[in-house]
Amino acid sequence: MRRLLIILGPTAVGKTDYSIGLARSYGSPVISCDSRQIFREMSIGTAVPSAEQLAAVKHYFIQGHSIFDAYTAGRYELEAISLIEELFEQGHETLVMSGGSCFYIDAVCKGLDDFPPADSELRETLSLRLREEGVENLRQELRRLDPESFASIDIANGQRVIRALEVCLMTGRKFSSFKTSTVKQRSFTIEKIGLNRPREELYARINARVDAMMEQGLLEEARALLPHRDLPALRTVGYRELFDYFDGLITLDKAVELIRRNTRHYAKRQLTWWARDSSIRWINL
Image 1 (cartoon, rainbow, N blue to C red):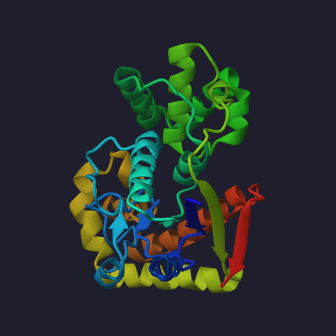
Image 2: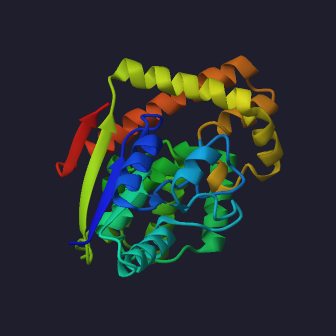
């Protein structure tokens, strides 16, 4: 029976080491399911596996693309499913996937809806409005056009609001109406293993990871990426806060404090997302 084991869990919980151990026991590579570790320019801030971890077992979807590529969850679905099928054809019976990107994991498990392609001109117009007017006006427009999406998406994320608005304005249909397709059938079974730790321990690991990133040179990495700050890949915790420091809006100590806090908030959102999935078998580390 062909089986895909998906190791998921909040950031900094310990997915990398766990998945490597599991992969070695099954003779499997590790298929990364992380929407930021896929970019080669973002090594430190995305906590890519170390050289030793990468040498322990073959990894896929680690630093294979540039931040200048328009990489999407839909593209990941196509590439990941193609790779999985190829690996099963090579004789693997169990494959290990590991990551914390909720939308990418859903893309593999359920498939994505057939959203219309992006309209670059409309996207640029909305992006300009976001910069000039702030997100609140766009939120209220989305609330009027599609109250269901307003209630369900992360409306603090300006890019999510823009994408939902873009689809509404392009098609005359609610963004939420595209989310009704049936789950795609896969040729393999999927088992999800969720890793968690007591909250205090998880938060301590997050804080320690942020401190380690700063020691490893996150500040210099972010400074090199500053000219490209408007790219979607760089609207990411760990970079946004340091960009504000470079702009003179906050001190470096405050930026590091915000990275810790925003990473903890991200971990909480990940757990909230997966709480609705009764198929996950949870392991408390």
